[in-house]
Image (cartoon, rainbow, N blue to C red; front, side):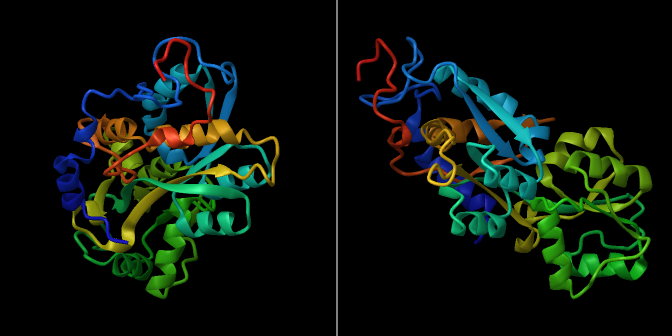
Length: 316
């Protein structure tokens, strides 16, 4: 799967999102079944949607920035539980989540194949980067190959901080070591079992290398002394560092307590053109953290909203 920033931006300019000009993310649309901005929502007000998600979507502030709109639209609360991808999927497997937003396609596909999730949608992307101290003791700065960079780190036995938490980032890191033909270990390789933000702090304290999603690194860059040494595909780096995110509902056929209707309303909302635009416009220190992937030429996010959820006073 190719992630090409220029092609995406060009498509955006061609009208995929511009075609919805004047439509706010709280707009139920003409003749749709969704709740609009006026009136009291029917049937779901007061409910809570439990979202298990990665630390990157939470720590960057993205969810806080966009969720108010959905909560006001339906009069509900979104309880975003930030975990590594593996833990987020395990929580959902145990029936303690309604919807999942993660970034490890192999783990997502397994979750779907085993029947725990349904109706997965591509959501957004950024990429992974290899960061480290400015002094760069392993000499990886500017390398065009992520696997060569990891091999150089291992050969130099330069300190590398691994999240070690079965997260999407950890899964990607292990895939990279495997592709490099290197099995990391020894005193130089430190597994922390922490989220991305804490792993970056530990790497910063130790002058170490680590693999980070771009969004979390940008959100913390002003507080740490690490620098990007190997870029991902957004800035012309290797495609192997692509980082796509997906969103999926928990299967109510497996867990009957799952709030499937509200989960699908959420998926429809977050993949709608206006909210995809909000994701695109979200900035930290002037930098874009996520790039939307759910833009459609002919969007209809109301398809996910059950009948009877229109607001009182709508002209549906």
